[in-house]
Image (cartoon, rainbow, N blue to C red; front, side, top):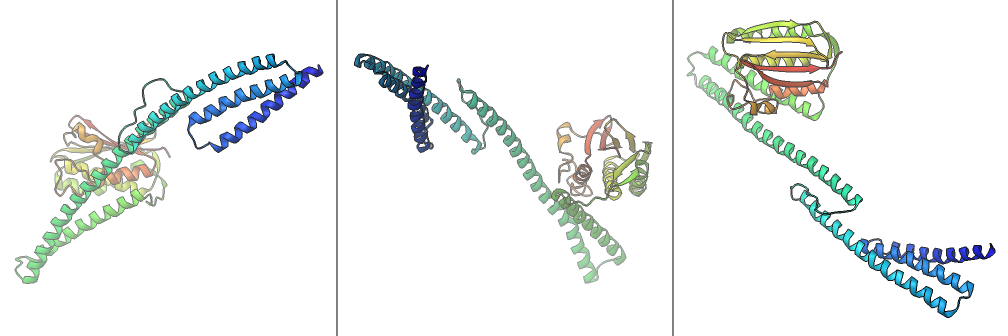
Length: 368
């Protein structure tokens, strides 16, 4: 029993010294290639076995012949182990380099494609994560391009819509200044109308900037959807009469909602104005408020004839007005963007879909 303990002690001492030396070497070469690290790990195992064997052989006073045999066996094992470690290290390093080259596509704006061939479980997991990150980056780049396009369109359309009333105001003011205006009162009324248009446009831009900055102040109160719809109908009735459009408030349930009354009235007002302007004379614009499984749905249905399917995803984009609405009185294309911003600030959702003869805008609000 005592001899066995001594053998174990000598073997442990030799292996421990080799392990500590290997740990020191690994620390020194920690910034080197993985091949070097694997070679050191393999060498530590072989040297630890050799040191333990030699220590035990010395303690047992083996004959020179037996000691030579043991040393030769351990040396051959060391050669095979080191060769295997080198091959494994070079293979792993090669796969890592291929993965690094594939990952460079991120900086070039391309998509990540994992290198072909077998690999370790860790590198395979890393490849999956890189592929998922590549997909997310591609979506982010697409959103960025869409936002940049939207900003450019907004600047172009705002510049156009501002230039038109400003040119009219300049011409009318010059006519009044030169005393050549046949009807000064009519000119003054028209100037006031143009100023109000400019004021509304600037107000929409300010509202949209607060929405995008996340600083839109909300004061939610419990209010009936019936009252919201009633106020919106009363506010849009003069415009509907001017365009010869019938306003209908059919299915309006008195369901409670927790919203900012002023902002939600603006949402319904924008939807009604948009629907009235797109609906031909003698057409009908209907507004409804109903309870659904997800909350409360406020909807505005018009008779515009429908929106092209390819345009539906862009209806709520900032500055977008469609190909048929590039000039006033279509506005600057901010009304529906404001609608979506206000609704999302209320943790709701704004959608649009085509129906026979027109389209239906829906605002889903969480239940009170």
